[in-house]
Image (tube, rainbow, N blue to C red; front, side, top):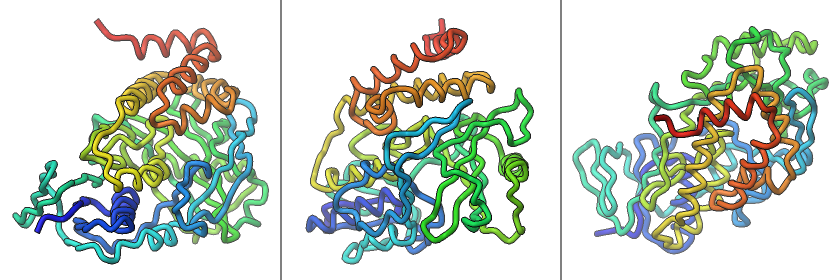
Length: 356
């Protein structure tokens, strides 16, 4: 029997899509080699990105005006929230779906071939398996520790902190501190390489994080829970048969994708067959933005973000969240180009202009 929808991959994007399909009365088959694996990553989002159907208990910590540091302090006029990962996974209930414990190897429009050789037909087949790592793809990496909030009382919650107190050499690829409360009296302190080809490794990021924390008089006990992050920020392409990271939902300038997938899951489950051209155009613009970001000298990165976080809140939101807002994204990029120093403009222009 052909089911209404086959979802390949049960990360946050695939599970959200299957969940919304079931809520709409669809017959759903999900394919994943480890469908019961527990999610351990920390997920966060801008609060206004989250869909109304999401369990309101999933956001567990909010920051009304998170701080961002380039060379100076900025307050972002937008509420940021950290999600309870276990609760998010439980809330995306897929009871009622047929679960196939296998690996999808060939995903077509109306059928998927599995590693076992079996073929599963479906009215719609959606690839939500994420992205495969490749040396050709820029990646985001991070090394973090979860610390008792009292021990880290001197750390202000921050979306990104590019200050240079992490001990890195001035000409080395830069990294920033990400510091967010987790809602249980603890805080995640994470040294992050925003994007690199290749990206910084865990050992270097750990060294930088420990140096930064010592400078700020925070000593670790050695028994802290560790979080390691590594994933591609490019490689997905918007299209009707792909969703989540595979469908180009990863924002190449931030690495965020979960909130975008949650926000789009219900619409796709409802039967939207196509993806607007504006979404593909925005994806292209953001990919150009990533190319420009990768070309900047390390010392110019904090200046770049100084310029970004002085943009009007509407322009910041358009670039960070407007997946189909072509005019808003283009306008934000134009304003940012005008706001950066002249030498940075030259670098950005050289990075994005077609090569002859």
